[in-house]
Length: 110
Image 1 (cartoon, rainbow, N blue to C red):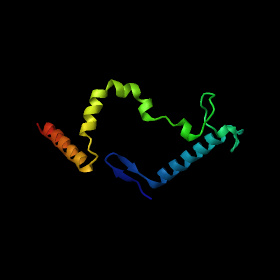
Image 2: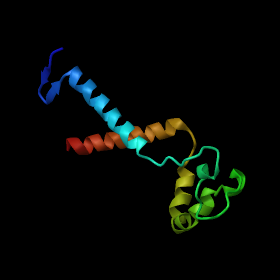
Image 3: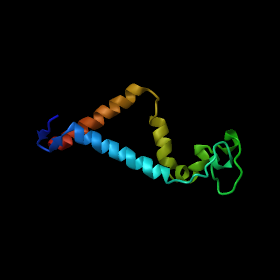
Image 4: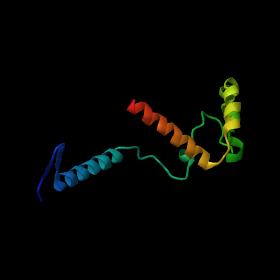
């Protein structure tokens, strides 16, 4: 194998393979230092919810309207304007993207 000299460094496949092997060896050693008391399919695999019981997914789901209530209430005027502009048609969004991109390009040229 030979070393390829570039303007920003070098490339030697053997060095990279050795570096990858050493990295994986270090990862394996660090992983083996972990706790040995882990038992699969026990209470240890459950999520910790600050001591609260874990309910089924349907009961635990928090709607975004409840989660962001204060944020959406304070920006209600902006959201009503954006809802009027929202058509759901992809070609409208592509058109806006092209217009804004053209404005950025014009600003860059000027």
